[in-house]
Image 1 (spheres, rainbow, N blue to C red):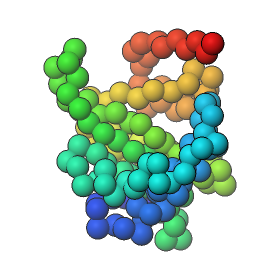
Image 2 (image 1 turned 60 degrees about the vertical axis):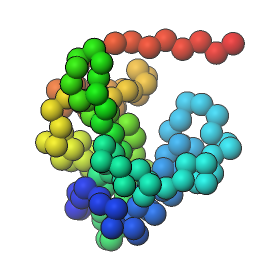
Image 3 (image 1 turned 120 degrees about the vertical axis):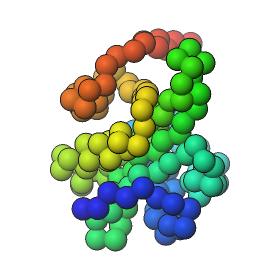
Image 4 (image 1 turned 180 degrees about the vertical axis):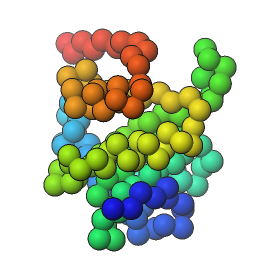
Length: 145
Protein backbone atom coordinates (compact mmCIF):
# COMPACT_ATOMS: atom_id res chain seq x y z
CA UNK A 1 0.00 0.00 0.00
CA UNK A 2 1.37 3.36 -1.05
CA UNK A 3 -0.12 6.79 -0.25
CA UNK A 4 0.68 9.44 -2.86
CA UNK A 5 -0.21 13.09 -3.39
CA UNK A 6 -0.94 13.34 -7.11
CA UNK A 7 0.53 15.84 -9.50
CA UNK A 8 -0.97 16.71 -12.88
CA UNK A 9 1.66 14.49 -14.53
CA UNK A 10 0.09 11.39 -12.89
CA UNK A 11 -2.39 11.00 -15.76
CA UNK A 12 -3.13 7.29 -15.37
CA UNK A 13 -3.88 7.65 -11.66
CA UNK A 14 -6.02 10.73 -12.32
CA UNK A 15 -8.09 8.79 -14.87
CA UNK A 16 -8.60 6.04 -12.27
CA UNK A 17 -9.75 8.67 -9.76
CA UNK A 18 -12.24 10.01 -12.30
CA UNK A 19 -13.79 6.55 -12.62
CA UNK A 20 -13.77 5.99 -8.86
CA UNK A 21 -15.43 9.36 -8.31
CA UNK A 22 -18.45 8.36 -10.40
CA UNK A 23 -18.60 5.05 -8.53
CA UNK A 24 -18.34 6.96 -5.23
CA UNK A 25 -21.18 9.31 -6.14
CA UNK A 26 -23.40 6.45 -7.24
CA UNK A 27 -22.76 4.26 -4.20
CA UNK A 28 -22.35 6.71 -1.33
CA UNK A 29 -24.62 9.64 -2.13
CA UNK A 30 -27.85 10.11 -0.24
CA UNK A 31 -29.31 11.94 -3.24
CA UNK A 32 -30.37 10.83 -6.71
CA UNK A 33 -27.24 10.20 -8.75
CA UNK A 34 -28.69 8.12 -11.57
CA UNK A 35 -27.81 10.83 -14.09
CA UNK A 36 -24.13 11.02 -13.17
CA UNK A 37 -21.77 10.50 -16.05
CA UNK A 38 -18.10 11.34 -16.10
CA UNK A 39 -18.55 14.08 -18.70
CA UNK A 40 -20.64 16.14 -16.27
CA UNK A 41 -17.71 16.38 -13.89
CA UNK A 42 -14.88 16.47 -16.39
CA UNK A 43 -11.66 15.25 -14.94
CA UNK A 44 -9.70 15.84 -11.78
CA UNK A 45 -6.87 16.74 -14.15
CA UNK A 46 -8.41 20.19 -14.68
CA UNK A 47 -8.74 20.62 -10.91
CA UNK A 48 -5.15 19.61 -10.21
CA UNK A 49 -3.94 22.33 -12.54
CA UNK A 50 -5.21 24.85 -9.98
CA UNK A 51 -2.98 25.74 -7.04
CA UNK A 52 -5.65 25.19 -4.40
CA UNK A 53 -6.82 21.66 -5.31
CA UNK A 54 -5.20 18.37 -4.29
CA UNK A 55 -5.74 14.64 -4.67
CA UNK A 56 -4.31 11.99 -2.36
CA UNK A 57 -4.54 8.36 -3.41
CA UNK A 58 -3.82 4.91 -2.09
CA UNK A 59 -2.19 2.66 -4.66
CA UNK A 60 -2.27 -1.12 -4.34
CA UNK A 61 -0.82 -3.29 -7.14
CA UNK A 62 -0.46 -0.17 -9.35
CA UNK A 63 -4.20 0.52 -9.02
CA UNK A 64 -5.90 3.40 -7.22
CA UNK A 65 -8.08 1.84 -4.51
CA UNK A 66 -8.91 4.99 -2.55
CA UNK A 67 -8.77 8.75 -2.87
CA UNK A 68 -9.18 11.96 -0.89
CA UNK A 69 -9.96 15.21 -2.70
CA UNK A 70 -9.04 18.50 -1.02
CA UNK A 71 -9.43 22.15 -1.95
CA UNK A 72 -8.41 25.25 -0.03
CA UNK A 73 -10.04 28.64 0.25
CA UNK A 74 -9.96 31.69 2.48
CA UNK A 75 -12.52 31.43 5.29
CA UNK A 76 -14.10 34.85 5.78
CA UNK A 77 -15.04 34.24 9.41
CA UNK A 78 -11.71 32.77 10.48
CA UNK A 79 -9.74 35.06 8.13
CA UNK A 80 -7.46 32.13 7.35
CA UNK A 81 -7.07 29.61 4.58
CA UNK A 82 -9.00 26.41 5.26
CA UNK A 83 -8.54 23.03 3.59
CA UNK A 84 -11.83 21.32 2.78
CA UNK A 85 -11.55 17.54 2.80
CA UNK A 86 -14.33 16.96 0.30
CA UNK A 87 -14.42 13.43 -1.11
CA UNK A 88 -13.02 10.38 0.66
CA UNK A 89 -13.66 7.02 -0.97
CA UNK A 90 -12.20 3.55 -0.42
CA UNK A 91 -13.12 0.64 -2.69
CA UNK A 92 -15.35 -1.74 -0.75
CA UNK A 93 -12.93 -4.68 -0.80
CA UNK A 94 -10.18 -2.49 0.71
CA UNK A 95 -12.22 -1.06 3.57
CA UNK A 96 -11.31 -1.85 7.17
CA UNK A 97 -7.57 -1.91 6.42
CA UNK A 98 -6.68 1.58 7.68
CA UNK A 99 -6.49 3.14 4.23
CA UNK A 100 -8.82 6.05 5.01
CA UNK A 101 -6.88 6.73 8.21
CA UNK A 102 -3.58 6.77 6.33
CA UNK A 103 -4.95 9.02 3.57
CA UNK A 104 -6.26 11.49 6.14
CA UNK A 105 -3.09 11.45 8.26
CA UNK A 106 -0.98 12.12 5.17
CA UNK A 107 -3.16 15.02 4.04
CA UNK A 108 -3.49 16.51 7.55
CA UNK A 109 0.27 17.09 7.61
CA UNK A 110 -0.03 19.49 4.65
CA UNK A 111 -2.60 21.89 6.13
CA UNK A 112 -3.08 24.09 9.19
CA UNK A 113 -6.90 24.46 9.26
CA UNK A 114 -9.14 21.66 8.03
CA UNK A 115 -12.88 21.36 7.60
CA UNK A 116 -15.02 18.48 6.35
CA UNK A 117 -18.66 17.51 6.14
CA UNK A 118 -20.11 14.14 7.00
CA UNK A 119 -23.64 12.75 7.19
CA UNK A 120 -24.47 12.29 10.87
CA UNK A 121 -25.69 8.73 10.25
CA UNK A 122 -22.30 7.76 8.77
CA UNK A 123 -21.11 6.53 12.15
CA UNK A 124 -17.93 4.85 10.87
CA UNK A 125 -16.75 8.10 9.29
CA UNK A 126 -17.73 10.16 12.35
CA UNK A 127 -15.72 7.80 14.59
CA UNK A 128 -12.72 8.00 12.25
CA UNK A 129 -12.76 11.79 12.12
CA UNK A 130 -13.15 12.10 15.90
CA UNK A 131 -10.30 9.59 16.42
CA UNK A 132 -8.11 11.89 14.32
CA UNK A 133 -9.06 14.92 16.43
CA UNK A 134 -11.86 16.51 14.43
CA UNK A 135 -14.60 18.19 16.48
CA UNK A 136 -18.17 19.10 15.46
CA UNK A 137 -18.32 22.73 14.35
CA UNK A 138 -21.86 23.34 13.11
CA UNK A 139 -24.99 21.43 12.12
CA UNK A 140 -26.88 21.57 8.82
CA UNK A 141 -30.51 20.55 8.48
CA UNK A 142 -32.17 19.31 5.31
CA UNK A 143 -35.81 19.31 4.29
CA UNK A 144 -37.06 17.72 1.06
CA UNK A 145 -40.56 18.72 0.05
